Image 1 (cartoon, rainbow, N blue to C red):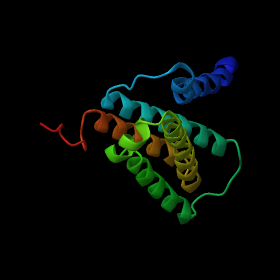
Image 2 (tube, helix red, strand yellow):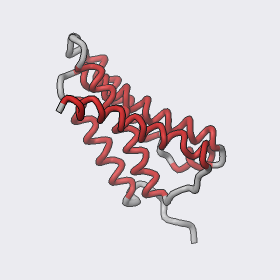
Image 3 (cartoon, rainbow, N blue to C red):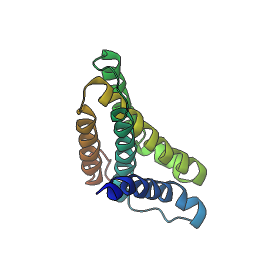
Image 4 (spheres, one colour):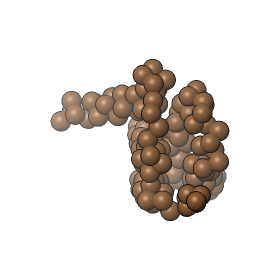
Length: 148
């Protein structure tokens, strides 16, 4: 059991690195928008898992309302990062696209960390909302219909 507990973070980190930097190294074809939203949800989730794990390994104080404001702000930022107007600019530039994906991991880490600092186990709730948001946007909710 100890081996599995040590290997899953490494496996997750490898998947994140491949997802972020793979297109730069191997070239990329852009997936459909629905899969791209799920990919962003995965990156936010992975970052959040590492943020939560970081908090839980240290004895810290909880309950400062500033952490709650950080959680709300980071959740909003994660949604703004997925606006279709952002994609048009970023998708054409592989380096910017990679930076955006790295940004999702950082926002996820900070969101998981801040939520867990506000209240123990709140990070898991924040992560659940991130994944549900990714699934909802993958179905097309919030995306404009194609132009005729």
